[in-house]
Length: 79
Image (cartoon, rainbow, N blue to C red; front, side, top):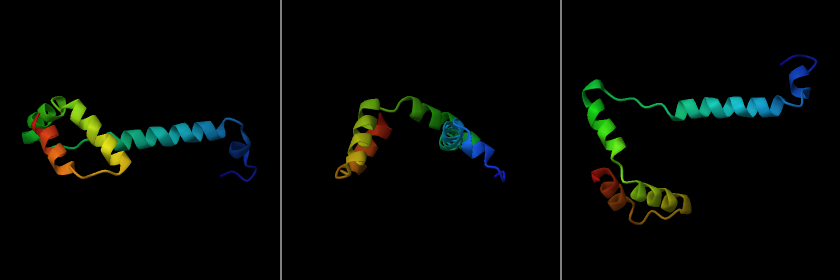
């Protein structure tokens, strides 16, 4: 940081800093690693995920309900 706090005093500084942090987190969170031999299988699974089951899983996890989580995961992966 500069001694005169020129960036901290700028009215746009909080917005720019927040945007930078969001971009950094989104690129880190969106990174997927796969071995070359299983890449095709992984992409097929990702493209054929049952979105209704995935949405229901997300909803249950955010609400803290995980009672039938294992069964839901299995049905989501198999569709």
